[in-house]
Image (cartoon, rainbow over the protein chains, first blue to last red):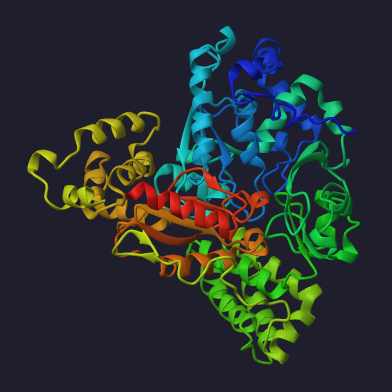
Amino acid sequence: MFETTLLKNTTLNDSHLLATYRSNGGYEALNNVLTNFSPEQLIDLVKESNLRGRGGAGFPTGLKWSFVPRESTKPKYLCCNADESEPGTFKDRVIIEKDPHQLIEGIVLASYAIGAHVAYIYIRVEYSVGAKILQRALDECYNASLLGKNIFGSDFNLDITIHHGAGAYICGEETALLSSIEGYRGQPKLKPPFPAISGLYSCPTVINNVETLACIPHIVSKGAKWFKEIGSVKGPGPKLYCLSGRVNNPGTYELPTGISLRELVEGYGGGAPNGKKIKAVIPGGASAPMFPESELDIAMDYDELMAAGSMFGSAGVIVMDEDSCIVKATLSMLTFFHHESCGKCSPCREGLTWVVKLLHRIDSGSGKSGDIEELEHLANGIFGKCFCPLGDGAIMALRGALKYFREEFIFHIDRGYCPFHKPYSPLMLSSEQRYDHSMHQWH
Amino acid sequence: MSSLLIASSSQTPDEYFHPDLRDQINEIALRYPERRSAVMPALHIYQERFGYISQQSMEEIADILDMAPVQVYEVTSFYHHFRTEPVGKYHLKICNNISCMLMGADCLIGHIQQILQLKCDETTRDGMFTLSTAECLGSCDTAPVMQINNDAYCEHLDAEKLNKILRSLENKIE
């Protein structure tokens, strides 16, 4: 039985409070580091653990930290990316709401490693409940001298500020996130220079995901060896998986990396409801191309998923059963990406507009022969030609659907209807029940 | 909402700069090395107070943060959360992204449209309800999900639950 680490406190009463966190060993890793570790030693420890970023790109965390030039006289910044917006992803929300101190301890440790004295948590506006819990946790830390000046009596100082997003998926992209904190439109910036050299206010900056930072205290407490021995060799550690869609037991699961997608969906998820067959599964949030049921034995591993043409992404696993329409699912995802396109580059801004138009046409039964080829043509004009990964992610989702479920698209076009569509029924409401605008009353 | 409209349309010179908001924003600006960074926090504060971001609010924020009004507009218009027009007292935001869609969000949207007699992005004539679709709210395991204003999510929605929620809001109005 796998012992949970990241979620171990979440089932406790008042798990969000400092007292609960501390009585379960919280902030001891920080105390240990501030007393016994140099920043370089901490970076080496994280490098040795092989921790890879949990936000989607999977970049090695210790390596990212080591890019920050120590000799630079500029201020350094740590930004926590809590803008979790990838459809199908809700793992960071669990940490923020249930164990915010785990995140804060990770932020302080990361800041110490890179020499930052100011950190920002960029949290999406919809997570208003989480933001309140997080702010309360920060206040608790300031009152207990765990933040501010001379943390644990050391000469290390750190201030953390929550920066509230305002409903823009693109701000999860690290350079867009920085633009947003700086007070500009949340549009990505050209790389290089990479943020580690020239990031927030043109100063050395590290951007880490919530779950990535939450791993740090445990790596300090239990050691790099412990971390490395969990799951995949090239991307080890405990991992949060988000299970949603047509699955019996949706939720957030902490399991090792490298677990098979089938075990996750059928074992932990309990398969599709009502004894239906699983048709397709998206392994890592909407940008990660879907797999058909026959491919579910693949390991949830950064490299293996990449080699199979998909990606680990945010580990947002979305299940579609035999009654789910792939065309509609694809339309839903592409509509999202189109809506969230920041408008900076034309392949994404204009290209996705046309992709969505075509998908709409096919979904509504008015598709024409040649539409699929046109979609592929558009995809070629978008993929690899965008300023940031948003457009690529959108096209990967589209291509994944066309690769395995082309017949469904053809069916929609040839027959002019959706075989999965169930006509909208007013559910359990009688038609007399209407809201009267002028009377503030129900009829 | 009506009092808000009055506040923003007929102001005496004394009220032109809301001193409490100015102080609050100045304090927030101290947390950033550049004052401009406080523009999003400022927009949140103004929207919270007035329900939306008026032209005047943008001018005030620009003045407080030493920005050009157009720079504040530039930011306001980029982020979907910031509104330049008032919405209903209860802004119903239903997620219709993939997981919620798979769990019947489209039916819920159809249902709510029928009850409230309005389309997405419309407000009831009495100014009480605005209906919108939301981008993934990050609660896919409790799909389908709705957020009202900026509050805690309404989860595992079905028609019956939705009816109850709408009725309880309607009772609050009276």
